[in-house]
Amino acid sequence: MSDLKKKAHLKLKKELNKDINKLIEAAAKLTTFMELQYLLYLLHANRTLNTYPDRATFQNKEFIEMVSALEEETIKYVIQLCTKFGKKAARVINGNFPILNLNIVDFLIHNGNILNSKYEIHYFIELFKIELEGKDDRFMKIHLHEAEDIDYSKQIYKYFLRIDQDSELKRNVKFNYQDLIKEFENDFSPFQDLFQETLGFSLERYIEFIKFLIDYYSEKIISKSDKLKYIETDQIDLTHPSALPVFFQASLLSQEDLEEKFEAKSLNSLMDRLIFKENNFSPTELRYHETNRGPLIRVSPDLYLISPELILDSLYVNIHYSFIESYKPIKEEYKKRASDKFLDLISFIAEKYNFIELDREFNLIDGKVNYGDIDLIFSDKNSTCVLVEAKNHNLPLEIYFKDLLKTQEHLKKLKENWEKKVLKRIDYLRKNYSKVGIPSDFKYIIVTKSPEIISHFSDLQIFTTQEFEEWLRNLPENKTFFEICETLYPLRKMNKEEFEIFKEEGFFPFVTGIPTERMPFQL
Image (cartoon, rainbow, N blue to C red; front, top):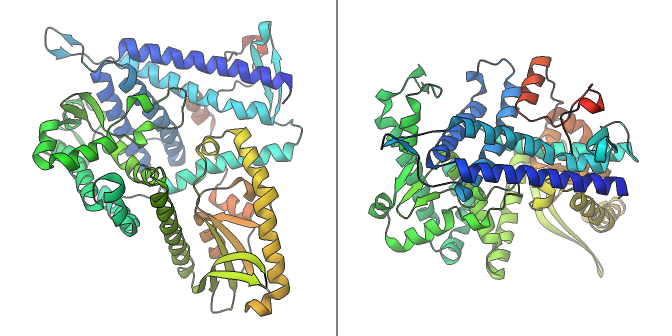
């Protein structure tokens, strides 16, 4: 890395830390229990908009989904700031009327959006040509069409976009909460015996607890439905003032209500797993949400704030990482069974396109040489033979959150080790297909749980499950990875009005067409 880029990184880091400290100070001095409740309400309203963009008056539904998804990241971050640093009591006027400071909420969200957008600049600095200008090099100019290796930089950039787009594809699978719970129960039923041993409660008890929390919230709202204003029969007007007190009251959960429903031992285990642990939250980790591990917010020894959005968002993440972080025998058993489930998912997808699973975990050995397993072998009525290598790995969090150095190290490791082994295996299959019992025109596909950087830098066909399904859908045309991406992840376009909104909300960290001396963004 050049001295210029090191300097830019340091200046940006200093700027980010300054912004974070500004938000911490505002949360600590000015936020209370009321602002925290309002943020949970905003999260609900924002999720409703993302789930049902057709209900918005704005015409571009894709734009609504994109903006609401970005805003959600900020709202969650600010919720955590206020939980850790804010006051848990409410300000009151005339003795008993609580005060809600909407200005401080607007300030935190707007500046949180700006903070998140600035964070993205780190990898722009590394990928593209930059200049520092002005007094004390306070301005940075990024040349998006200039780099040491422009094709390489573009592919890295496209990979980071693909991570976000893959998450959106998964998030946009619409579930009502009952269907999501059923899906969760089905996905984790093979691990029932691990729950009690690892977590201190059964799968059934965990699901019962989650259902209780969501129903508790919903029933409180239903009981006050006559107080609410409706846009349509089933659509509450969340912008009407009548909604606030109803939703605020619904978010309150007492220890007494919990103890009436659950016996002490299992309740303690459940709460320990789901309580937001303030010490685990670091304000510098902008993209990692501790609420995914602890969605219940304790505001006093006998009172909690609940949010269906936070609870359901934590459903899979919490249990998955609880098993991964368990002691080795449990961790390895969980990983093995999870891999089997992933193979089942791939097989299910293939069956949708009339492929039959012929074999599973076929060990490729020739004499003393072990070429590894072929995880799945499929064939269809046209004798199209598809060999699948499955990789049921979550991305390291650093890569998921776009740490360029970690991403480059990961790519190097895959290219130097894993890819060579795969190419050697394919070469053996090309030369010995008849011995193995497959046709010479077999197709070798790697299916990964998460988007992998090597997909962009390899001649191998390496797909996520969604990309694999798109590839199957287009057979017999053998679409390339890049062709699949063009279909699944179309380039988003904004008109002038949308772009202005995007900038006003703080999502766009750059300024274009303005002389350097007038640029508002400084380092």
